[in-house]
Length: 199
Image 1 (cartoon, rainbow, N blue to C red):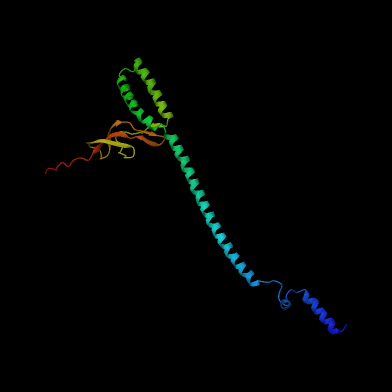
Image 2: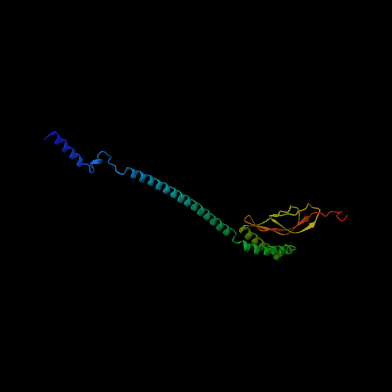
């Protein structure tokens, strides 16, 4: 066999290993441009997916925070309700306590009588009950300045005391666990009228 035949046979064998004799010199990764386009599209989709994931994550965090606030508010409202559930009953009981104290003042004319001794025992029980419920009298004295947070001025009268000074206490006030239950009813000193106002 001649050298030409040998070369031709060698070329035919090499050509058989390549599907397209014209493409034998090209790289074996067909559609490289298509693959690049697919990669860019995949990157865009991945970025969009990450953005969407971030949006849902933020929404989940916001919802969790709102739920936590709601839960705390419910716990606080439940505690407030439990703490002040007896408020209405205690408000209705206070006039009874006032009348009882007036009866004690009348009975106090004879402190050795059995009526007075019995009423004193009941008064102590009432006081203990109110204390156990968190009810405390508001300390107020004649000569103290009027405080609109705890006092209620029923009337004012001319006085030589400074304007706004408490000159009489009409009814005791009470706090319920640090919150105002009933204000103290008082009479306060009015501003003195000008002596020469008619002139």
